[in-house]
Length: 540
Figure (cartoon, rainbow, N blue to C red):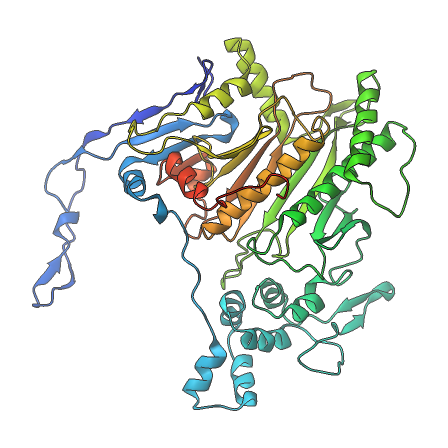
């Protein structure tokens, strides 16, 4: 098989192994011997090992597994055996440590011998900008963060300094009003710190309208959750996109606070907006305004849309885009480390099938699910087998990468009759998880009520697993099939990509070479340990 994928047509994983052993010609002309320091007994430490006299024989070095991604356009994963063997001995070591408690207010009080509040305020104001940003990102003391808030922006006059009513606004051109932000970098970093008191979060970033005039065009509001749907008309996505944000009275700054009801509400707005827009495109009777649709009403509308498409009617929009950037961080050097603010929100849009071409006519519009469709078609042509059917068999019959039979071999974290949550054999993030429909469901238009609920539950459990391991930032994307693609094998696939503190991505990742220090089987075991012992499908 010439396709660069680890999925064999018979439903098993295949991959390569490097067993390096080599000699390196020494082409160095001279030596630069120097002292590196000394041992406790004052014996000098010399850098002699760095300057060998002759050629260098490496001997047998650690093996490296090379695993092509199931989807070739996502590159190749390399697992260093000695690193991974250490993790295999104890999957419990696969986790991030909680951040330490930080309070500059307490430290200054100690240093300045019970300094007055005004003296501490002046000390904060004298800190250099990078230190303010670092403190805004890492402090766990609300007193620190309130002091920083007063340096970042101006608040409107209020009855109590501890209960800001809102931001101070000033007029600008065209009678527009804008808040007085004194330090944008500090403001944004601070507003994303979960330890900032909630009333400051609401005043600074959460209350509808404080981040701009984007219209709220949908909502889910009940006793368990409250979610707004914002229209981003002036969008970087053609034809606009929508954002489902948890409301200011439902503050969620951690995955540990996220509930199943929150996830259902967020996803409901994605399903609702997609189906309503498609119904409008197809000329179906307009839905009632100023009210939302129930899941049962959405299911009825989905059936009507599919009936129209099955009859041959054409629609300008043929695909969906859905994504979720969870988490935020900002380095003191002004490098932003993720693309989202901490309040949980998801983005979605419809994608046209074709767009105008610069030299006349039209050309296909891009959607990442199209890359999956192209590969699945090539796989079927070369092997006479359906890719996703083979992929599912390979996942469910997985054998350990290192060949051992005395340790867990399953890649599956959770499954129910509709979906499979699993660790991909070739992870493109060190801690990647994927969620896949087990049946032939390629997009949300093909997903019935039960399947949509299963997708919501799977995403919720995936994020809870990652939270249990200490993850603070996750990018999640949907690979979905075009509505007009007749392939019955392509399944909707979600990829969850955590960002880890010491893995910023560099030249290897730019080549789609993903370096890993554990076997996927150990990560699956670590994730399973984070799930509740009993999962009630009716309540998740």
